[in-house]
Length: 529
Image 1 (cartoon, rainbow, N blue to C red):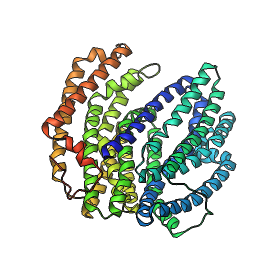
Image 2: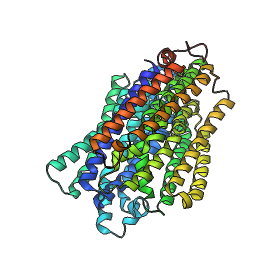
Image 3: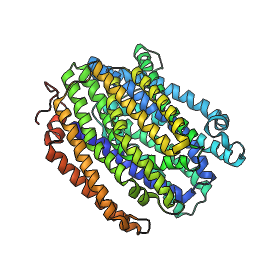
Image 4: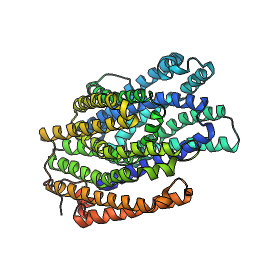
């Protein structure tokens, strides 16, 4: 299977999850609004979800996948199975103890960490504790599912792990639809959503567990022991966890700074939800596929193939990210107006959120490239360097945010995030080059300027068209008219960009077919130009 098909598999599943996530949020807003039940549910869900992002998805997979790939090469499937059982025994035991401790300590955790502001409202505080107790086992399910997903990715089976998260949205949409049909009150909806989260964790774990068994890997439970392999996993996972922790701390600091201005936090969140769609679809797809592919190539001594994988992945990332960034830069305001401007979301909020989204468009290539560069370190079992660079980017972000916020409000924080992202991407790239882990590629260097030119011409045409279609995109236009106009603009922009990209030589069929096939090549130059 080519890398393109693997990217499409993971990216398509991620896109589906994000789309259903939008549907879920729309239904939640209709069912519980922004009242105390919504506050309690979101605060309670954030706790296990943050742990999941820190350890289950980021730290664990970045450390586990290269070691699992190494065991496959060294000891075959049987050796990889033994290693998996060793890790599973330790992971399951730690998660069981952690879950018990957290469940018993939940009132204290809500009061001091999760939602200290709720302590003065006994009803909201009690509801948050109740919902958090129901949902916290979701962390254990997702951590074990992350391990199974890492195994599947290393075995070049991507679909099950990529599609499993969609079921969280399916289940919660079902809960909300059932509650609406039966006219449940907000409290019942909150409880139903919490049990839905717990059920979704079990369903997602079952999906990847069955997929692993179908892949010929049957895992039994072993008494937890700190074997050399497990100790090595912990050594690699700790810096990756710190890296993820730094990112989460970064977001918390930005939120704390933004809270000083009315509407700044929500403006950043609304813009982020749109910008995360291309970032998640492209970035997650590339990061998920590239890490096991690079690990396999490096373990097999195929340096040329590893270099080709990295170059072709960056080429593919830029091919899709540059037009998305240009579109967000030029037509952010019509997009925001279509998606959000109704009810209590007024036209002035559209201008603010649109400006933030346009800034995020400038940072989109950097954040996607970070996801393409980091596997070059993790595949070589180096999780320390990305941790250091993440720390540097936090310092840059916080310094700029504090400096710019008093004058530019939320726009200053968005600017700080973008600059920090580009600093991180540059540090990762130049370190790979300096270490000799990034091979020169003449085709990539020729294509990047042509892709930039194609995206710029597309942006110019969009800017002109938006000016002509002002009445159809205005606040006064019916929603159907705005939707049809935005859809038409996107379709025309895509046609123009892809036509220009292929016409100028920024892309060709070999970039999307032969150069992306998973086989070693004698040099980093694509097979045809």
